[in-house]
Amino acid sequence: MMVSRALGLICFFAFSEICSYGQHPPVKPVVSLTPAFVEAGSPVLIVISLPNAKSVSGEWLGHKIEFFQRGEKWVALAGVDVEAPVGPSTLLVSAQLDDGGPHDLRKTVEIHPAHYRTGKLTVPPKFVEPGPEEQKEIAADAEVKKAVFASSVDEPLWHGGFRAPVSSPSTDSFGTRRMFNGKLASIHKGMDFRAPMGAVVRASNSGVVVLAQHLYYEGNCVIIDHGLGLYTLSMHFSHIDVHEGQRVVAGDKLGLSGATGRVTGPHLHWAVRWEGAYLDPGKLLKLNLNAIR
Ligand SMILES: [Zn+2]
Image (tube, rainbow, N blue to C red):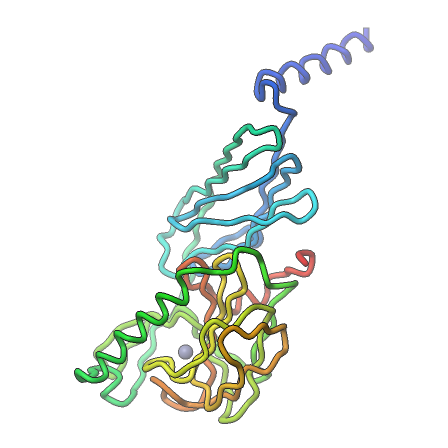
């Protein structure tokens, strides 16, 4: 009696898998998000167990996601822009299975509001109402940045967790809505470190330097491409020690902190950009990526 019931259950599951997947082997993907509680501005590590896939891609909030394989898992370091709408969102994943069949997944992810502050700053007037010459420079900078962000290395260059770029303390200023001289409102899309003039700024993870030059607002700026659309940006250097095309690993010296560009004083502005979305650097530093190497 017990044996025949057990056999019946085995047959039922075998049948349901054949019905669901036809000739494909059974696929039971598990999608895990870290952190599980996703806020606007959160970087998110997505891990999918899908051992019989040969490629996996995705889309979330209008950003494409490129996954890479680690053992039997597919991994992506993605995120939610600081200005993303709160509420339910749909994470779409498309896999190409080894036997050629497609497999699509949908997961609803709730975006929770992050409570960012409002702040006021006073900077020289030329940074709030730039003249014609400055506007030309700003437009030229925009083209330079557009070209930099147009193509990212097609594999992950980062290894393990990200580390702070300077030893100076940071301020909890990501996402702050700022009024410059009471006129211009913008959202602060990075983290400020209280770095004095001349503090050594280091690479937070491995990657390739894709920009190392002076820009109007950013001052002396270094951008590192960590692959698959992920970049870190460091601004306001007094001196840059790297050149474009240079490969760096975590801890390599990028330059010295300073007060170039739109600043109220010496500090390091450090930003994290993924597929055009600006993510909270503080949350990236806390994200445990040690299992992903
Ligand atoms: Zn800043």
